[in-house]
Structure formats: structure tokens, C-alpha cells
Image 1 (spheres, one colour):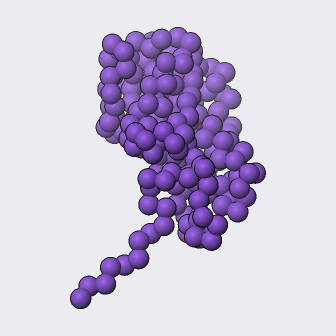
Image 2: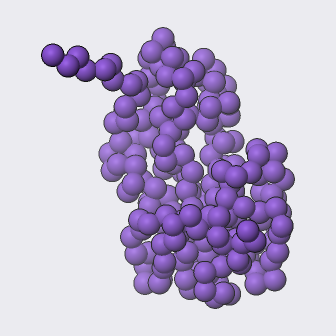
Image 3: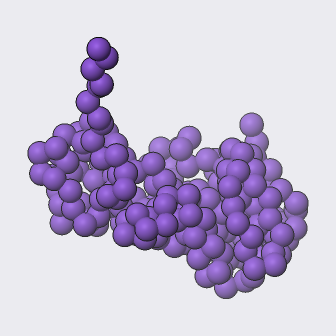
Length: 200
């Protein structure tokens, strides 16, 4: 399915999306992107539908052609303090606030958001597979977060964050079981599965 440019065709509509919400370690990262009305790209799609190679190919194209783009990380300590939903929305707010051109409308991937300033917004379920500006934000959020996880992998290589990016893979959980947790883990998350309850 070909993605539409934006939800409203407002020339200063930004799309925003986050990455890393379900991870056990690392930040939740959001990006905001305003694309020009002439923007076209046949490859751009929801970041989850694309290979790492294609995401890395698209990143500089988005950054070069966007009217404005920005991203923000919210780190585990704050995630634990305010919960992952609020942290995801805060990351979106911070990325939108960092745009050099203020948007006049915000298209949000998903169904949860809080008003940003007095800017009108719309939440769109699976918006990253429907609208180019949200898909572009999903690419930037994912690639910037992945780069951060590869960086901290060097500090704690035993968790293999370079590969699993902090998601709850079997390998990641086995490493937690063996080595314990780090300052990059989200302590309010269930880092290890609970043993099955005995039914008497």
C-alpha cells in the first residue's frame, strides 16, 4: 500500500513516533519530522517493516529532505519514575519542541498522546504504515535508538545489545539471569519471567 504524505496535507504537519517502548534496557526514543509537500519515496514505510540496511539507507535521505526533524531519548531512570507511557509521550514532546520549524499540526502514531502547547493533534493507530511523515519519524527514532544501544553494548557486551537492542529476547534474559542488571536496565519492568504458579 502506498503511504500518503500526511494526515491533513498541512504544509507544516509533523509526524511523530517512538521506538523501544517494549525493551528491558536503554531509552525510549521518539522523533518528529516535517516533510515537504513534494516529498516522495517508494521505500519508506513503518520501520518495523524494513530491514536495518533499508532504515540506515533512508535515514540520511529523510534528514536531508525534511523541512525539520528532531529526536529525543528518555532514559531508564525517568522511565522507572514516570512509567513507559508517559516517558514515550515525553520523548515525543521533547522531539517536537526541538524542531527548528514549529509544526501547526501533529500526527501521532498510536492512540495515546497529551496536548503539546496549543498545537492540534490526531492519534492514528498504525499511522507509521499509513503516512510518510509518521513513517519517517519511526525510522529516525529506531535508527537513533539502535545507534545508542550499539554504543552502550561496548560497555556491557555480555548482554549483546548490539544485536537485541535491549528487547526481551531469550539471550538477553539469560544474560540478566547470569550477570544481573546494569544502570541501563528498566528496574520497574519484569526483567525475568515469573516461574509458573503451582495450582493446588
